[in-house]
Amino acid sequence: MSLTVPGMARPFLLFCAPGLIPNALSYGAMPSASLDKLFGITVDNSNLTHILRAVMGLYLGMVFIWLIGAFRAALSGPALVCCAVFMLGLAFGRVFSFVLDGQPHWLLILYAVLEIVLGVIAVYLYIKPRAAGSWLEAANIHWQECVAGDIPVYIPGLLRRAGTRQ
Image (cartoon, rainbow, N blue to C red):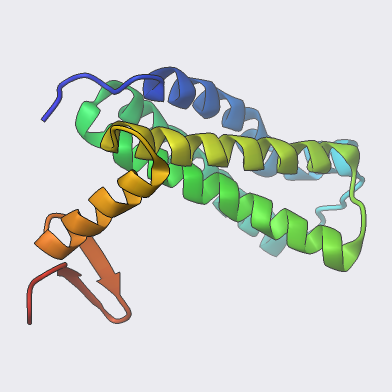
């Protein structure tokens, strides 16, 4: 196992982490002031404030795992996966909203573009060190690790090591 964080993973994670902090704080620190000023959203009850502060906690949790992954080789891969799932999940939700609800504030469109780009980069950085050449080789290596039982695989209702019977 390597003790150094591979390639561009550290600078990438260090770029993503502080970039998320202002978003987290705008959602949770004083949502009634920040969301009204940014998007004209009125936050006027404790339930909505609670939900927004929970979202802030989720965002700050992501920042935490990305910072740990930037400095601990064993966690750089999981941090990149968290980053990819987080960014692409948000982007999917935003694009879904664009289709159903129409065009939002320009800043939310910018967020969607950044989330797609950063999510794809996170996937690439996760796969790149695992394969000598192509993405196809990386997928094949991952599949072989799963079959050999080296990677935990989620099966609905059951978490087990791939390749083992329970």
